[in-house]
Length: 204
Image (cartoon, rainbow, N blue to C red; front, side, top):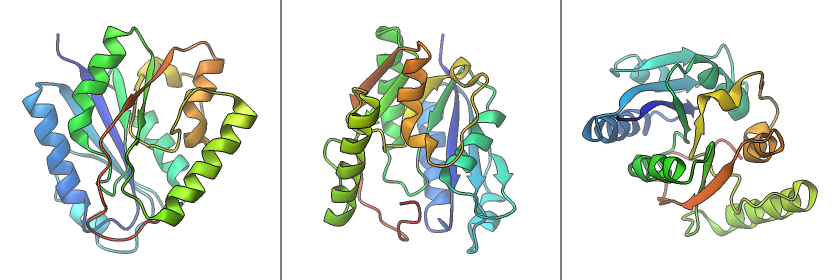
């Protein structure tokens, strides 16, 4: 039986990326014959992101009234998802949709509830890498989880993970630890990380 997935993508001023990312996700899902939906959440963009989203099909589009931040946008998308698995990813095309089938396979073969992507070979600038490593170290000290790269947005969850869970602040970085504390089984797999080809980083 083919997987049933909701692909949830918060986007903010990504006019140069949304159409190409949508096409990549669509191609992967159709090649794998997934039962799928694509959910883009426009987090108050001020460029042409919203207008471009209106041309994309199939797409479940959510438009935030203003810029509420990545976690709030992700929460809105997760709450709108109806498929068995929820895949979250960034809107800048640095996460690779081609990793989704392997993540689903890893989750099912290892009887996990969550699989977090690990950008082992990151393509970010040195300053961003340094900041991310510092945040990961601090998180490990405080939370003591086993995830190498909690800041990686590319993750897959069973939809039941989010029953009675509301995300706010910067909570999207801590979802695996939060769910592990609730008794869900969490794993990690190395994923491809690509250089940004259009636009600049908005979510830090």
